[in-house]
Amino acid sequence: MVPIFTVLGFIKDQFSKKNLSRTLMIAIAIMGVFMYKGCNQNADLKAELKHKELVAANNYDALTGQVKELKTKNGELEYTKTILYTDAEELEKLNSDLAKELKKEKGKVKVITDVKTEIRFVPVSVPNEVNDYGNGKYGLTFASTYRDSGLYSEIEGISEFHLNDNKIVPDSTSITKNLLMIDIIYGVRERDDKVEIFARSASPYVSFKEMQGAYIMNKGNSILPDDKPVAKYKWFLGPQIGYNYNWPSGRSNIQVLANLQRRMGKFTFGMQTGFVRGIETQQTDLRFGLRLQYNLFQW
Image (cartoon, rainbow, N blue to C red; front, top):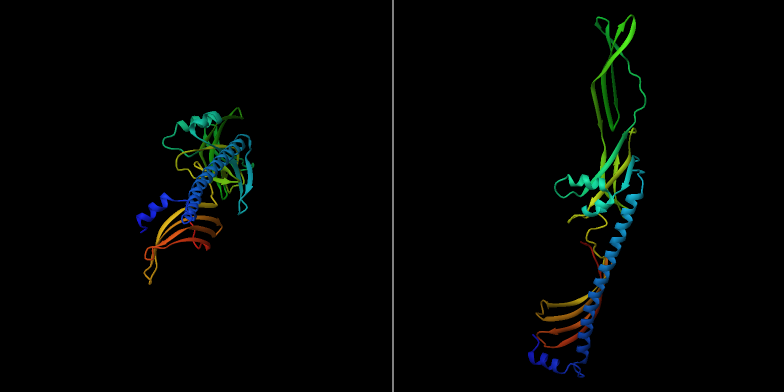
């Protein structure tokens, strides 16, 4: 450890010829700490401004943009639309209809959407079968079935009529079976700094002409733009204190250093300067060094 009388002597006469270099290094380290703090604040401010710009651009596109048709990697037709990125209170001003629906839900809703699905069948002809019920009453039964990879439809019914003075008089049509199943893929994603919903069906007769929605900002949301933006720092400056033990020599030292680091992809470049005091030798050295590190793993 550093003797107490040495520390007291340094405090009493920091600017002597003997202590001037140490005083300058301590001053540089203190300035570095304040510079680092200022850089952090500036980076946080820039991140917050960028966050607000992303939200404003996202919501403008959500309010004015139209449903877009895209192709997936597999060539399937997909419909997509930017949705609002807002909290429940602001949603009242931006989309009152969605806000009303949101109030009906329990728990923390993260995404609420309103999608109009359109199904257009091509005209088809189906065979009829005449049923004779007696007393001049008849019925035409019909059945139609359609199936593709994203749509299944089945409808059955009977149209009744009777004869009056050899004239056909219609009665009523009863639908005895009406089944419709649609396979639709829905999702929420980030694309081009926007939050959007997408929907697709493998059926060529299914389309989505109206889409709107909102991503509700709650604690824990992670989709872009982030609820709590984090600045992506590249430069790092700060003090370091540590203890080293060298084996097998058994020597050890205490270090008080200032580190400046920059991350460049998988590389980290660093510079450091400060004091190293050998515990056995009681000698204090001024250290200055450079390093280049390749990061095999990053997290």
